[in-house]
Length: 222
Picture (cartoon, rainbow, N blue to C red):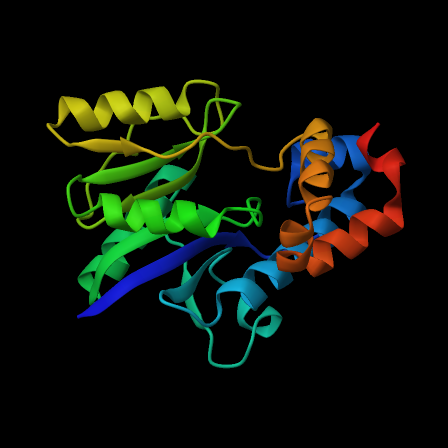
């Protein structure tokens, strides 16, 4: 058995397709460029380390492997909606030999290492670890069994995390909540990310993102 997979749910960064809410504010080309910077920073952070980095990519027919390092673990997402694709990714990885899976999205490149550690440690006593976001969603979900906490839960709403927790608890599952954070969905999230990047440790972890936002200047936040 392999210990832990860090699964990153990723889209091929086609202009006009990725980060559509953010793109409405900053433009489709900039949104795609920023998404690529997130990809590069996540790969640099996690391609080596205590967990196996797995790119769970969409669309399944895209040439996502060309964007990441040769030999990287790439798993096509399968399913009609995001909830199905997440559930299927958990099942594929946990049935494929991993003991537990931590799942994040590309739009949280700033996720703290200590939160990943906390999620992994929490699975020794809980069924699910969940990292809530300020907008009502979540930036991380972790499990050691492929529990279906996704079917019937609308994604990308202000109630996603709450309904996921209710569904888990209704099934008798124990849920551990991580510290609250944010993902990069709206223009104001860029301002929060820029504030984080003023901290030297965050900027060092995210050099591609930091350089890109510095080049754009403050107008991207306004």
